[in-house]
Length: 431
Ligand code: UD1
Image (cartoon, rainbow, N blue to C red; front, side, top):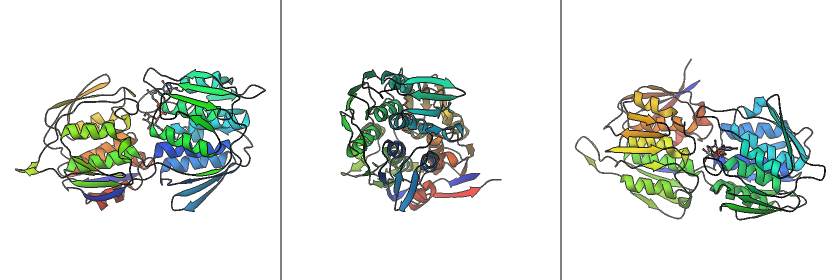
C-alpha cells in the first residue's frame, strides 16, 4: 500500500488548476442511465471513485469510452439487469445514487445498501422516502433495496427531503433523477442547494428534463416522456480548491488556485479572512497572500470558530482541513460538526503530531500550538487524510501518511500538485 512521505518546512508558492468536482461528476455519470443515447462528460477528474462509478455503469451494460483529455462517453443503450451489487456499492457510497435513475429508466432496481462508513451511520431513509412518495414500492432483502415503480410508472408528488442534519445532497439527486420522467409535477422541499445539485440539474435540463429552482430549497420538476443524450462539462471541485488554499494558508505562501469558482467558497473564504489569511480573487482564481515571517517563525493564523452546515454554510468536507489550520492558530478555536457529528477521525492522528485537542460530542476545541512534530500517521477517510498531509507540510521533520488510497479517491495526483508548489513530498510503497 502506498505511503506519502512529507518533509515539513517548505513555504508553498505557485499555481495549481482545480480538477472537475468529484461530488458532481459521480452523479453526472449516473444521469447517463436515464437515456439510451450517448452522454459525454467533460472535465472528468482522474480519481479512483470515478473509475468505480464507470465500472458500475459497465456492469449495468453500458458502453464506456475514455476519449482523452478528461472526456468520457457513456452509452446505456440497454440495461439487461438493473442490479448494482454489494461488491460495487460497498466501495463507494455515491454508487447508491444509481437507484433513482435505474428506477426511472427500468421501472425497477435492485441496489445494495451502502452500509456505514468510518465517520458514522450515514442512513438512506430520506432517499427511500422520496422514491416511495413517487409511488415506488420499496422492500429490503438480503442487504438489497428492491424498488419497483407502479404499473403506470412513477407519479410526481410534493416531497419534504429534510433530515435531522439539514438537507441531503444524495437524496436530492436520487429523487430528482427518479422524478424527471415521472408523470406530472414533483416539488422537492428542503432540497440540498449545493453547486453539485445545480450542475446535475443543468445536465438533466440539457438532456430534455424540465427542472426549475435547483440551487434553492425548492426544486420543481415537470416530468417528461424521455431524455436524450448531451455533452456536459463538470464544475470545478470547490473542496479541492479549498484544500490547496489551506495549503497556502498553513505554509504562509502564495498559492494560486486557477479554474475554480470563488462564489462556491464564500464561507471558507470568510473563515480564512477572519483567521488572518488574505486571499486575492478574480472571476475564476483565488490566491493566498504570503504572511510575514517574524523571529524564527511565521506570523500565526488567528483562532477562528466554524460550524459545518449545508451549502452555503461551511462545508463538512473542509472541516478536517480547518482543524489542521486551527491546531496551529493563535488562541483557542471551536469547531462544530453539524452534518456528520462523528467525523473526527483526524483528531487522534493530529494529536500524535502534538495538536492540543479536546472533543465533546460534535465539538472539537483546539488550543493552537506553535509547530507540529512529524510522525507516522494512518489515513482514515478522504478528507481526514488530506488534513494530515497539510499538517505534514509544516511539521518539523518527516511525516508519513499510510493508507493513501483514501486520498486517491478524491484528489487527482495530490503529491504532484503539491510538489509543483514546492512541497517536499513523495509517494513510496510500504510492505
Ligand atoms: C455528499 C457528499 C459528501 C459530503 C456530504 C455533505 C457526494 C458524493 N458526497 O454526501 O462528500 O460530505 O454530501 O455535504 O456528493 N442523511 C439522513 N438520511 C438520508 C440521507 C442523509 O439522515 O437518507 C443525513 C446524513 O447522515 C448526514 C446529512 O443527512 O448527516 C447529509 O448527508 P448527505 O447530504 O446525504 O450526504 P451525501 O449525499 O452522502
